[in-house]
Length: 184
Image (cartoon, rainbow, N blue to C red; front, side):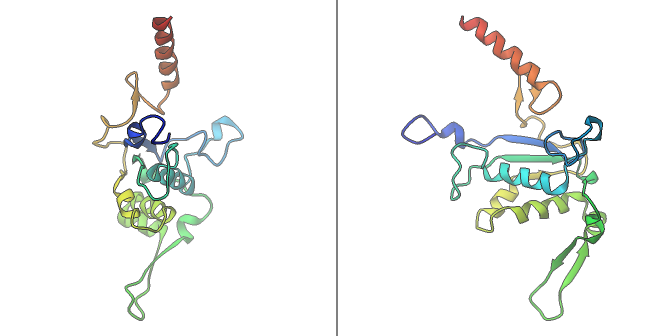
């Protein structure tokens, strides 16, 4: 949408998305061959999808210099899925610019200390552009270890069914069919 054709106010509005880090996902999964082998989304695929939503790249009005991204609520981070030996070999570094102050910590130790939420935050932060909008975008990321969170009323719903949950496409079709019947 451009500013000369149509209103862009609706496109700039922020929407709440919910993503579960522990439930299997058909499109973000790494193993797709047999249907029963669908895994939860791996850390990298999950973080890249979250980064796209936080930046607003999924919207038609996306511009690198504007902050038009949405809110993202991630649940189930205690069971983050990583492939291979990353959980034990991936290291995170800290340095306070003093000689000899380089600190390293592995992913499994970081998950024990701070939980999977901190690991996901670091992954998403690394996938966002390194500019002055990164801190504002990271504030819109809400990460929880379990399935409970206080933002249930904010998540996108269509016909009383949360978008992305099981059976929401049937609700959308039913509402659209009733709308077509009333129009005709």
